[in-house]
View 1 (cartoon, rainbow over the protein chains, first blue to last red):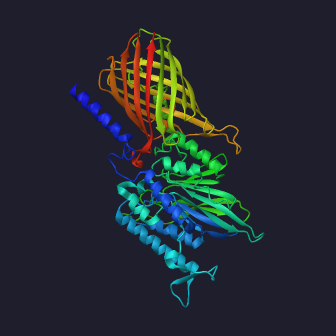
View 2: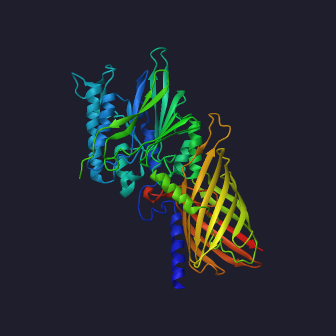
View 3: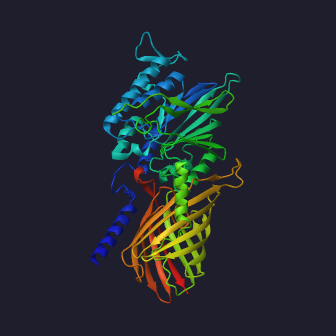
Length: 336
Length: 241
């Protein structure tokens, strides 16, 4: 009988713990920064530096490239290849769907070095150094303006994934990318009629399998609705956790029922054109209420060692129409 | 083909399944009654909808000692979730416990977002004096009628149903407390989002029984650092005659 009482006491203690705002059922065993705190931090950063994100400007048409679940470790070949592919094709920006690196400090050092090197290549390709002042960089397509190297934004925009959070990974992730909850517009100059068109890019923090209360409140308050100055042609949403499952045999968690319906409703509200997801390490393509949902396979060396079509490139054309294609990656993982 | 075969095997193995009612002892059939009715109240908090409360009730008719049919409904205020189901089940007595094969048809109206969800669930429950295990599959379809973009809705790939419950006392005792671990609740079935909590029952006069559970519903699986999503309490009475 005494054993029974111990079992009851343990169960009740566990339930009391889970009632605490800061402790999740699994968080009792594995600590991490909860979604509420991540979103609060991200939103503060986003509000402070929002203007820095409003730099994407395209003439007539543009493309962007999406990859996910790179799980960078000591062999960063795929991430390096993604960065090279985007630069070579003049994609306007990169979007990453989370689980960017496995959470060890040394892997983030590798990732940080890759991104810094990619920024150098990006600046060399798109900017010229001022002849008189080597600290000034002039965009090749707008030589009248200039920026300091540190102020040039390397256009790499990630969402945070669940594997980015283990072992207190948020500290490593946020040190590089700062915010997991943000949006920015791409302004498109139409050379025929002189109009400025706008498309909207929204990045959600879904690493914990839920948006959390704060993020839902911010979304409902319109924090990601963008500016009243623009009438958006297209909205693109990026989420780590997938909305739809590729098959019956995919047991990665998806959103709970209410949150699934909340998101589907919100995507309709935003007049969303495409939603990109990762997490499940399997390709899936479907359409629901006119929105295209693409779930990308993992591009990581460990999960997908052989070359394959792990990236997606989206073309936004001059007439406003969209098309997308899979992009092949050639890198073969090093054998250990 | 391998995945198809596995899905078929799983579906075949489960044939018809389990009662969504997961209260411990719920499947116990003493052979002396033909009718059961139960009702409960619920309250909780949810990340999306904040606080919610609701009522639910159900009826079972034991046609024979092996076959039973029934139906349930729930009204969840706050969530604006309205549901009903009908079910049929077969009990296979074993030397040690019983296996229940149940089939359910559920309808859920998530009125807040205008979604209609229909679910067919087939499950098998092995119920022993101290442990019950449920395994099954669900076909889930949802859509929004009349949405301006138009849609035929979405059918999820078959969703595995599984659950484990343990009691601290023999199931036939007048009161009991147990723990459960499952990826479903009365009216929904999810993929890899695991509910867990405490359940109990206690005797009341006149063939009635008090039952209840405290349910923690995290979002995300263990590998996803599950986060707090919903906590709820249910408290109800069951009467049979």
